[in-house]
Image (cartoon, rainbow, N blue to C red; front, side, top):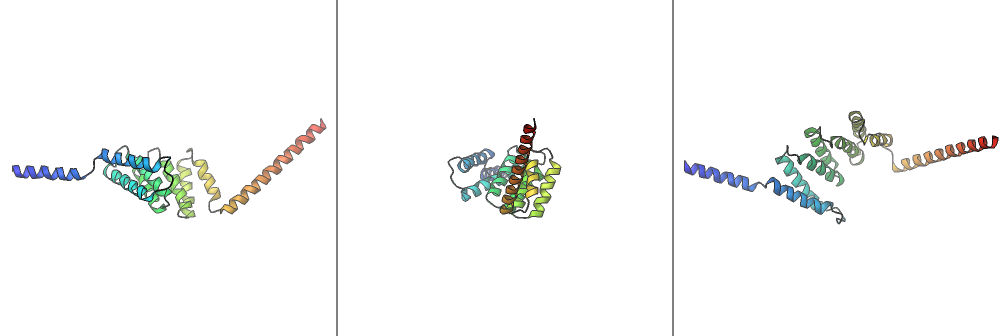
Length: 190
């Protein structure tokens, strides 16, 4: 009986000894974040970013209810989005929205999903659908105006946007000139 207890305790020590502690993983994450996100970092370091993503995923998987998990998941999704991996970023933002729908970053996750559909996967229909869902769900969010602007410009090439901007500027200039002309005529009459 004593042997069974000793082997059981020894097995638990080995099992828990192999798993990195919460604090150890947090320290590794913080060290990696400082290295990647410091002002001294001059370029994107994919191997370090991949290591950081792996640490985030390990922490989140092992500590889904931890208060740090939503922030780590949000940052992981952003790092993935900025690395150009639209499919994985969408998956991570979906995971955030599913697991932490009431957290403050949930609206931004939905906005970023629309952004990814528009810019990384070029799925204009899904982008439109997601921007509209964002506007409907979060009509008073700081990014609602941006979502509406994105909808107006969805699918337009940079050349088309420049032409529209130039035409709008000309129209504005014409309106200003017309207004000034009316003001001058009014002043002359007096």
